[in-house]
Length: 170
Image 1: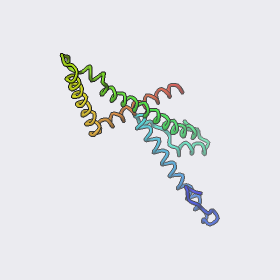
Image 2: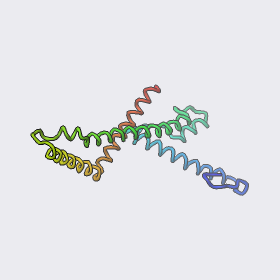
Image 3: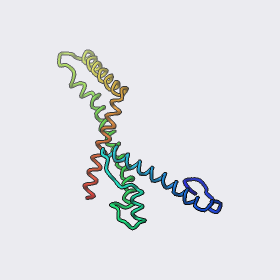
Image 4: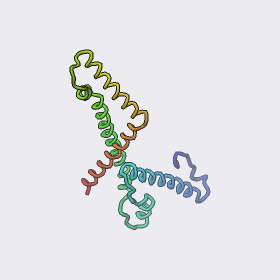
C-alpha cells in the first residue's frame, strides 16, 4: 500500500518503487511543512524559523545532529491542535459573554434615561434600547465584524497559551 494505492512490488520495474515512495514522502513532507508554517503564522503570530522535516530526517539518517527530533516536530503539530481547540473555546466564551452582556436586561436598564417613567412607558423605553442594541449586534454580524473579532480573540488566546506552555517547558 503506497498512499492508499495497492502496489504490487514484484510487478514494478527496478527503481520505480523507490521513485514512488520518494514521491509519496515528498507529498507528506510538503504537507507537514505547510501545516507547521500555518501553525506558526496563524496561531503563534510569527514566522518562527524551524528546521523542515526533510532536514530533521536527513540529519538523523546522516548521523548529524539537528536541533529537534522527528518526534518533537510531530509533537508540535499535535500541541497546535490542542491549543487551537482550547483557544477557540476560550475565544468563543469571551465573545459570547460580551454579546450577552451587551443585551442583558441589567445593562439595558442601567442605560435607560432617568426620569419619571413607570410601568408601560419604562418598558417601552427599555424595549427601544434593546432593539437599538440588537440592530447594532446584527449589523456587526452581517458585516463580518463579529467574525473578525472572534478570529482576533482566537489568535490572542492561542498565542497566550503557547507562551504559557513554552515557559512551562523551559
